[in-house]
Image (cartoon, rainbow, N blue to C red; front, side, top):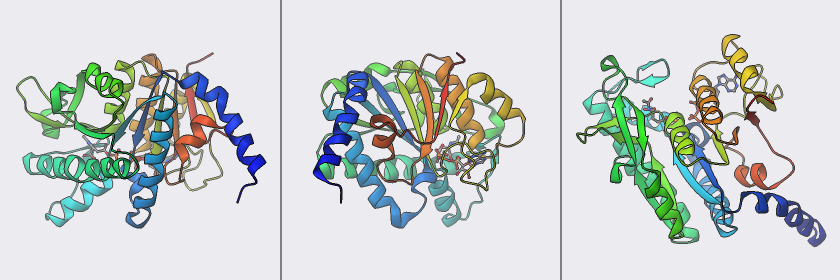
Length: 289
Ligand SMILES: Nc1ncnc2c1ncn2[C@@H]1O[C@H](COP(=O)(O)OP(=O)(O)O)[C@@H](O)[C@H]1O
Ligand SMILES: CC(=O)N[C@@H](CCC(=O)OP(=O)(O)O)C(=O)O
């Protein structure tokens, strides 16, 4: 247990960060990889809910966006379907789209809202389909019902935040005709962060950050400029889910978001450690200086 003096020290350390982020938007994207271990998920959800509520109580405008790739895989297999990806995007036929909506909107979103509401009843779940939040266009007919974000109705999120609520966003969008589309959650979070001109976007994932060598957790890359990030995308050290994540970080920073962070969502209270302490964890991406 921490001594009282140490506790006070930690609180004092947080003060400049609280001053810096008060009134600013922070988008937190929770990846399915961070909560893939079902036994740990409930504790992690609780710690994350506490982090978001603490930030909210000091005036940070926090938007939680979640994915759920591994969980969708699991339910597809239960339904006798084999997941298929092209360029990191799930091939989504009509039946898969229903599974995506059931898992993201019906299950993961509900679990996260419930975790917040167990602490304080301010969690509100919204799907990108709701109120035109995520307007989508089809990416490529060969991928089926996969969309990319064309427009974000940021005002909807600002109104919820203004009312003291804590929005939790599922990344299913819809086109002008109301057709739903499955949207990669890293991209959707980036589009929301850009539309809201967030101070930070924080990606919580199932790795310590960007690793030089994916098999060596000690090979963490602490900082990257956009130029360095582009070089790494070319050098073959990045694979699978980390590719769209890095691309989304680059687009966020290029789009005016102060900084993008990839951190280990399996560490309880990772958000608070990143935002309010000198420690800072994971990988930080900033514009070239
Ligand atoms: N160079 C790398 N550094 C870190 N993780 C990597 C790297 N290359 C591939 N990965 C993999 O990418 C995963 C994160 O992507 P993904 O599974 O899509 O996460 P999420 O569900 O959070 O979006 C990590 O858990 C890791 O297995
Ligand atoms: C089009 C597309 O691929 N959509 C993703 C949406 C969920 C997601 O992105 O989840 P993670 O953040 O856990 O990867 C999918 O179906 O897996």
